[in-house]
Image (tube, rainbow, N blue to C red; front, side):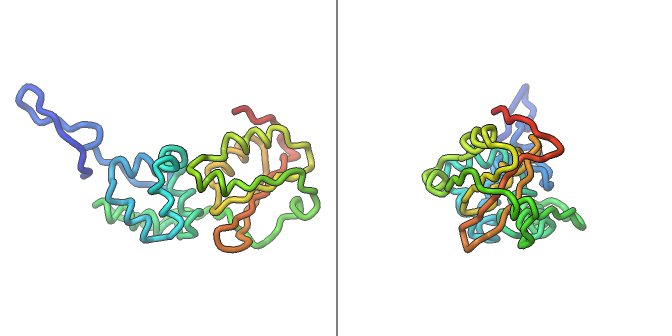
Length: 199
């Protein structure tokens, strides 16, 4: 049970929304989970150094609102089942047996990355370190990306929520870790579905 407050109504103890248990699943948003279970912040940080950025209040409000635990597992390079079950145990919830993994990082460079020229490179690390989120800028850039050309995004971690948004709008995406805290993600318009991104 989370540590939310309770109210007295007509002499009866009534639970508030924060008192209601929030099931921890791969699709749970990080921000919602930490609002219900603030003690899980330290659990996350102890699992992977990358999660220490969650202490940044601006990133907590931006990335935390859209990032799911499935995406966070990719960011921290932690098996999804390990992440979910450890968090569930710390929150007093029953463990699940397993969860489907969905990797984003890969050492196998796709053919479309090999054969397409890079039209633009955007290093989002300074923006992220200052507490800003690059999603708006990247989506704007992708909207203007010529067919058959690549957009190269540089971040200190896998930009999982952004990758998911781009894929949902008809882009292919591939990420690889060049070195610690330097992840390069490439985007190209899918030949199957060439659709404009609207913010």
